Image (tube, rainbow, N blue to C red; front, side):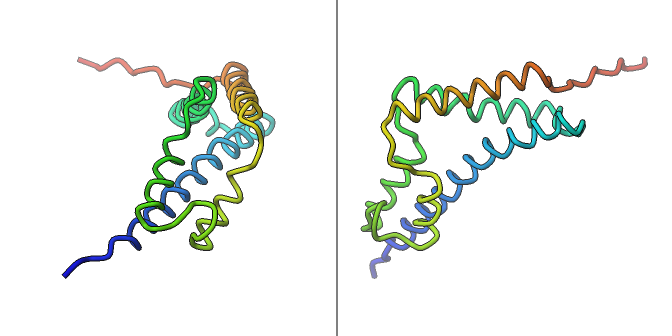
Length: 142
């Protein structure tokens, strides 16, 4: 009795594109929240874990763009869709198609390099202007 894995592959491809969408939204809206937090003096925007993860998230994307490396999430999604008998542009689920429409655009590669490096620069500038606050370690009483 053979198990048909094609539906599982396409489900995993949809999960990958969902994660990819979440990653993009984290970077974009994280920066919006940081700027708003700076204006309105929200203390949570200085959380070092949030700020470092946010910066590293866009730094990875910018480095891939500079090095002309394809996004591993996109490659993985395409491979899973192929294993499931789909093509990423046409015969995919509604949610997969919707999320892809929100994060993939038909522009030349140089546009995305400028976009990613420019956005990483903005994130770096706000990291400098609105630095995270690292807690000082309390000495242990002996």
